Image 1 (tube, rainbow, N blue to C red):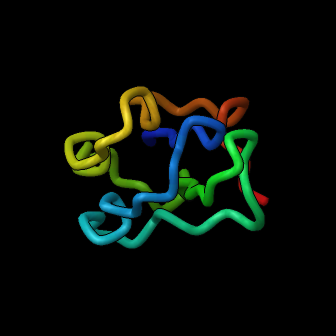
Image 2 (image 1 turned 90 degrees about the horizontal axis):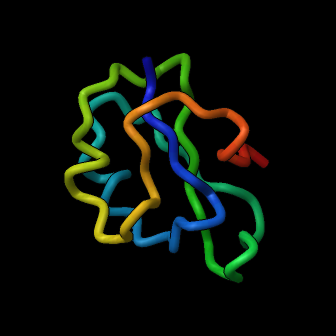
Image 3 (image 1 turned 90 degrees about the vertical axis):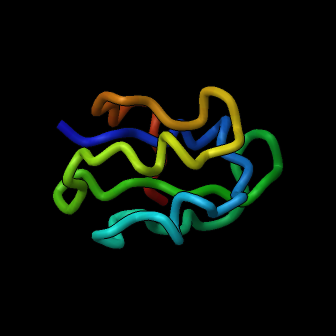
Length: 74
């Protein structure tokens, strides 16, 4: 099961992008509800390694479960 970036909590720090071994983290278009850039995880590519969760400095921005309802991919 893939991890999820809660796009309305994400602040666009991008530590997860550099750490991801399979390049499954993509930039969102525009800004989220907080007014910041955001990223999202491609569930089809994610290998559930959890590195993104370990390196993210934003509390609650990444969940260790697949939740499409919390992740905006546009």
